[in-house]
Image 1 (cartoon, one colour):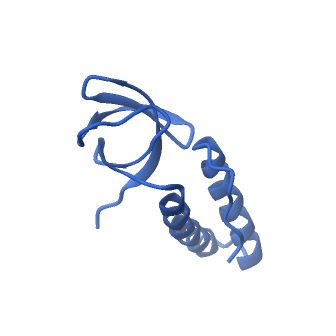
Image 2: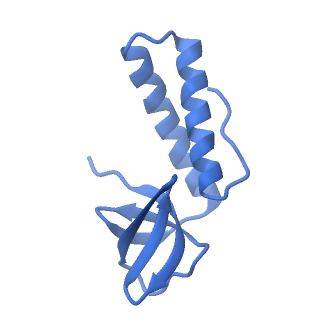
Image 3: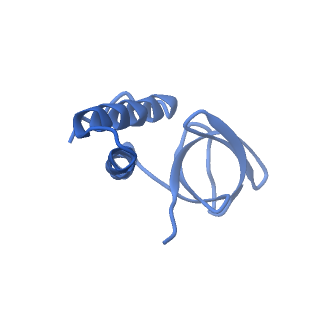
Amino acid sequence: MCWGVPAKVLSVVGQIAKVDLGGVRKDVLVGMKEVSPGELVMIHAGVAIGRITEEDVLANVAIVRDIRTQELMDSGVDEKEAESIATDETNKLLRSLGIDDSVSKP
C-alpha cells in the first residue's frame, strides 16, 4: 500500500519545495505545475503530487489517528488512553500545518 502525507509548503525554488511535515522540514520535488508557499500539498515518495484542502487533511489525519490508536492498543495501552494519546498527537500535527480545526476522539 502507498501512503501520502499532508505537508505545508514553506518555500519554492525551481522544482524544489521546502515543506513542513508536522514539524519535520524536508525538501521535496514539485511534481505538479505550480505550488506556492502556504499551500497544503500531498507528499508521496518525496514528491509533492497535488494540492489538498484543509478538509482533505482532516479526513486523512482522522485515519492516521485511528491507526495510531490501534497501534497503541496492540502495545498494551488501554482503549481510552490510546484514543487520548492518538488524538493529541493528531491535533499537534494539524497545528504544525497551520490548521486551527481539530479531530475529536472517536
